[in-house]
Length: 62
Image (cartoon, rainbow, N blue to C red; front, side, top):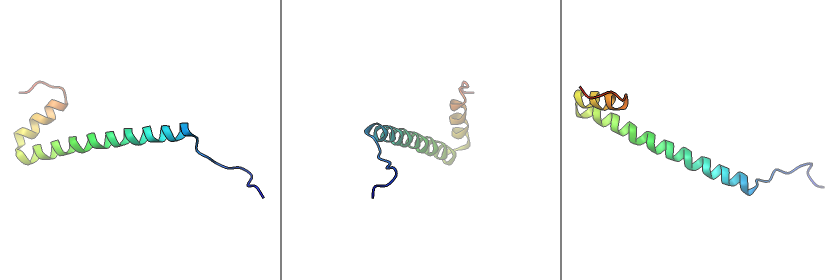
C-alpha cells in the first residue's frame, strides 16, 4: 500500500537550507568577535571600553 503523500526535499530546498545555514553561521561568528572585543575592552580599562562603545555609536572620540 502506498502512503497518501510523501515529502521529498528538492534540490532547490536543500540549496536554500545550505545558504541559510551559512548566513546564520556568519552572523554567529561576527557576534562572537564583537562580544570578544567588548569583553576584552572592559577587562583592559574603563577608558578603553568607553572608546570602543563610542566607536560603535558613530561618534567622534573625545
